[in-house]
Length: 263
Image 1 (cartoon, one colour):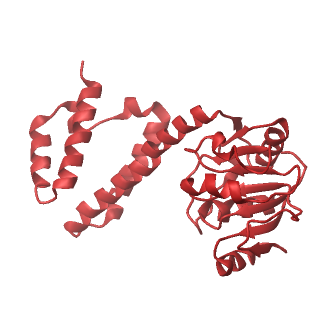
Image 2 (spheres, rainbow, N blue to C red; image 1 turned 60 degrees about the vertical axis):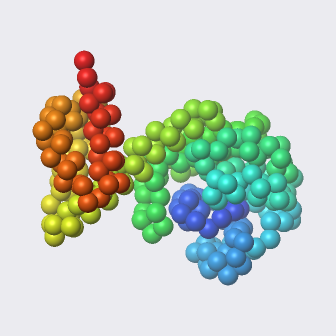
């Protein structure tokens, strides 16, 4: 870990800002500014940090912050970056996996970048940041070196990744994380419909994840689609006849597995 500390402004008060602010402060950095378009939200959020100022204004020209983290929704990154007034020589970075660096091209600083933690975050649920990959990209040497230093102060896994590769990583993460989690939700609803506790299937979920990581997901696939067991597939598809959307989801995924493992 590196010893240099930074003064940091957080633009946004969502999940990413909630987590990153705490990681930065725990690593010895100072959160100087908190922005939200809602002044009350910004004020409440700032109370969690030592001596942080809050504002609903994007004029940070007199701020002491050296780094500004733009932790907002993807569609807000470009318009906000054009409005923010920044101190000279400061660095502005967004945290998105899907938005390219050039979306910051009209920001009021030549030092822009990306600080993308490859992890799922929910407010109030702690995550051990030390092993979370942080993908860095910078438009200048100052931006790259500053963001790399900041990332290394909180994580032991820091990598420089281009916008193109980062978008692919984010797409893969959507399949691995978001889609998988939704499958757990569908599974839970099927069990709830029969008054069966979802906890019954949790050891199976844990073993599935463990095995996938240990021997590779392509080697750990099981089930009727992998076996091309058409009788079971038809029975289960029919069992979902009262829920056409879920039935179609079942059909599409099953067919994809059959095609993937076909000779």
